Image 1 (cartoon, rainbow, N blue to C red):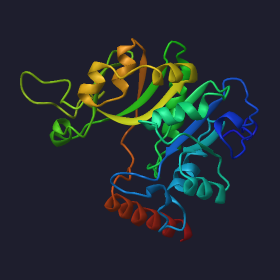
Image 2: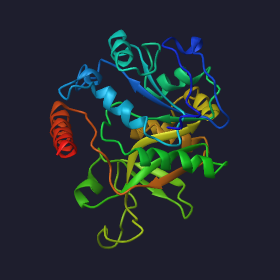
Image 3: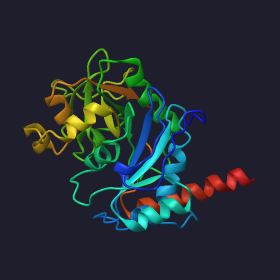
Length: 276
């Protein structure tokens, strides 16, 4: 993160945040709530000696194209945890239907230009991937939103409804996102070896122009969004251009306690190598 453009934040409500914002500023916002349905208290897990939310925050802080990192939460326990490691945090309402809505509240009164939506359960996030995401919007003034995708390598993932697929045009703009196998191969079988890859798994990392984010969250869910349960289809229904960048592979997300144990094992291996 640029030291010269680091934003000045205080730990308070979004409306009270005191910022000195440089031109074309970029803010990474990490939505975090305590009451996860599959893993309650997930942001505060700390078997590594650091909170899970701290791992994500520290990774985000390594991004070169971001000016600030901010946690948005509705829980005082998370506020205190973020303060304990020196992070920036704001309290939001508790009734938001999604993390995107929570982020919109957090940046409503911030004069930033671009906003990155970074999930709080990606402790092994590659900062370069976030920089790539930000660059997509900085290079293309017509794009209001950007996201990432990675090549699919197996038919199992191609047909898995929990693995969201995306199809792009010749300029890497999203044509459609679906839980169904797209593009569907009418004759024969999908070839996962073609380059550039035709079969892409969506990676749930987003960047928005702030004004579009506020418009997006003020718009009711679209019919396709309600059918597929995919929020990004609302943006396509608004005829918005979504730029899609490509990365080699997705990072490990923490959805369950088993996921967290895998992360702990990886982190300890990495720490041992660093100490050797």
